Image (cartoon, rainbow over all chains, first blue to last red; front, top):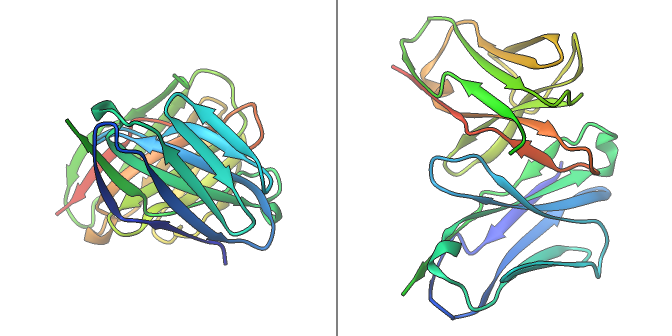
Length: 113
Length: 112
């Protein structure tokens, strides 16, 4: 059974204070690892897909990295508008083309002035 | 914007009543999904569809049924709602890339 564990559950940063969110996963074969951002009362918003260990993706202040057991979402010099819940999900290679994602419970990030 | 509309956005109902949630997409995507989101559980797959009249179960399908009679609409039905089905329900479509899903705004259901 696929498992995704995110840590910490909640993180409070001051503006400009860089940090990392962790996503550790267990799958029989990784087809893809996905990061999403979710604002309160909204649906998850797609950020990145990572496919293989060593891969990195960047978008503004966010950089996602992948190893064989975990992924990190690095937030550099965050701003208050980066406050959200960040979700990690994996797609098992056994799911074929169906894109059945298994999600973690998320990290709730708050960035204060 | 993935062109997904969910309705209703909010619903309060009583135990034992039937409920249908609708997901409408405008971009002719083949794959559509229903997830529920609950505190401490994250998003969990209920059912998904890979084409008109083609559906399959997810990990939490008990108590739910789905139908897809045309490409653009995917319906989730609770035949007899229970309090454990109080949740936020998200519809998603699979993008044209390699596996990422794009979500609607959610439907908040409260079963009293």
